[in-house]
Image (cartoon, rainbow, N blue to C red; front, side, top):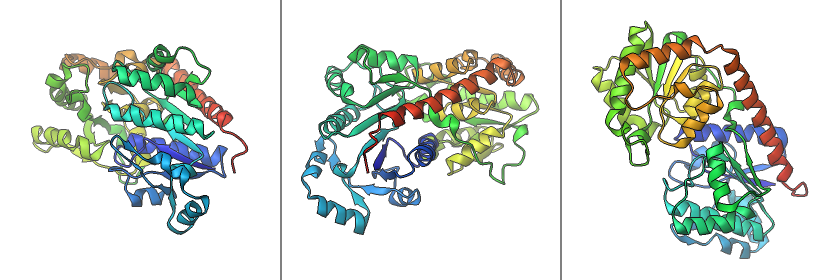
Length: 384
């Protein structure tokens, strides 16, 4: 059985952490399954090869999608390409795990929905399994997107919304269907790895920025005017508490500019960590005193490990995440003052060991285990 994992990459550490989480579950529950990955800007060949993936040949460019032609390539030729060059086409894939995280919404290009819908329909015609792993969906208001999704989504083997708002967006499109369910993000099952160089974590409060807070995708437009000020106030508040602020770049390329602005405005008097291994990123977060975070999987890595976390939001997925962990008050507003920030930081630190927080973490991990049981149940057992 060959499983293609879509939507992951090797620059965004959250997306790469999802790949590691999937690989762990494949080894545990589907030991004979083989991994396939397709190329794109943030998924270079050497990174794909390093995780033992077969190389999927991309046959789509923009609106031109030729993947359907792969089913007409003789099986012997496809086997030869796989054996000699490690190359696969869509026709060779048995199952797709779509781990896009947040790609299907008005906030992203129409091409995402068009390509996904066409692929689901082809998989359905050929008796294959397309699974949308837990992710944020919607909102959807573009008429063409709505038509495509209404015809394609019922043909998926499984559609997993990551939270209630996303589930409602899907339900509005297609009603209640047996292939719909809700489970939380599944990276809470992955253990982090603490790098040797990170030795004084309990003195550190990590600040993890996100460039999306400043662009047009952010529906909370006030943040575009206050975001850097809030982060600078956070640095001041952390120091006033006798702790050490440390910048952690969770998505190296996109967030580098914000990190450099903060470094410049603090006269270089702040440490910056840029770690390429997502397991070590999670380990660093887990060993820290607290986190002030704008990256979704940075927030999950903190909350799932019981690390005090304050967050910011540019999408409904953040509000629902902090609700799930029983921490809605830990999500910051765009007009928060330095004094209010100081109070919130002390509050989450003081309440990190609360019974409610401990219980929510355990319950969400149990739900992630149930997710993978559900996923395994919809994969045909007769695939070689």
